[in-house]
Image (tube, rainbow, N blue to C red; front, side, top):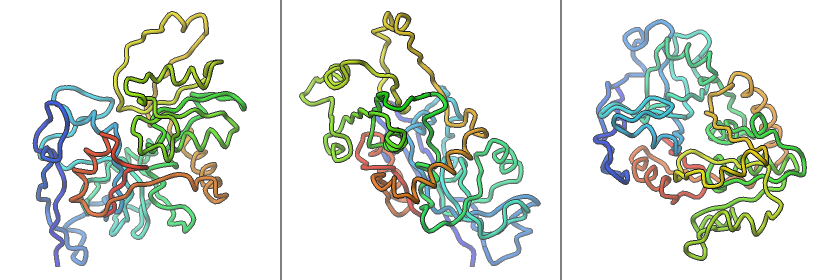
Length: 314
């Protein structure tokens, strides 16, 4: 029997806070996995069953009209996509056999999808489409979490130095802290939501009106050598620019796909080894089941309601 399914899309762009009402379900063609694939797949295509969707703050930058983030904006009434993990159900692509799992940046917010040959080939070159093994000691969800986060290329830390991490209970913050501590760095972390203090002990907003700068000064009077932050927070003006030159400070922005071909293999090797050694037990995930949960969970994630990496399980 064909499998009718829907995909999540944007119904309108927000003017202010994003709400679940800005999302809608759209119909997509039904797929019969037992039928002839020649009617569904062209040469080089693959039929995927999506298993995990990653809800990430950067996606808020794609929900805008006329403004462009570092990646393309979502279009109204067109399926949303992002990072995720899928299982290949059928394939006419020799490098991507049926039965394998794949992590990619074009995982659609739907249960099934057909990914075209041209898309697969372009993403393979950029290592944004990677076949992954189903290993019992490495959860598949980690491919949209710890196995996609780095620290050392741009941070260039040295053992014993101090690193400040904001948003420590989010996916990137958690991963950076574990990586830093494995490298014998002193880590200072902050969170802006009290319930996250199960993970981070310093809430810079308490007492009300508290300053993150004053909080840091109280626990790191000798200063910091690194500050790892995640896209999606408030915009700040540079109020202490005069300290940058005499202290020879470096501010470096980067995108996750920068130099990815170079570093992703090392991240996989190093982090998988640490996972098997039990060094990632403190890493937290917050998973909800069902595509219908995605709109409210995504909005809640932007407001800090999640406790750990936000994931939708399909």
